[in-house]
Length: 117
Ligand SMILES: [Zn+2]
Image (cartoon, rainbow, N blue to C red):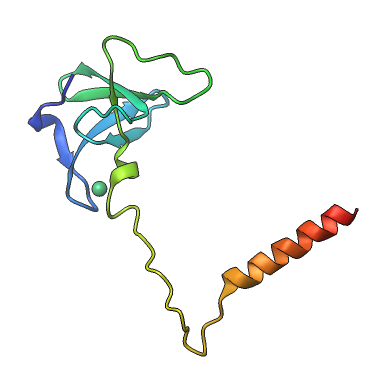
């Protein structure tokens, strides 16, 4: 089942259309408006402008039922909710410290210490 245009809202961050659903736990979950084979959320209409959703990836999750369609949660595709960090410049300004290298060294040291025990 495909939601009608009247059932859709706009995402507050990226302004793309979304469909609001209610999960089995009673929480609101926004999904992309078109069914997606790669999605992990089964959705079905329960009444006018009312959609239920449930996760399909849980250990105890039932397989998709004939009355359900699979959608992608919007948070997974929202361009504004998933900002991409720009690559660090090769030469950093003198007042900036690269923490990732120090963390790698510390992790290696810890692994070596644990291996000798
Ligand atoms: Zn969005």
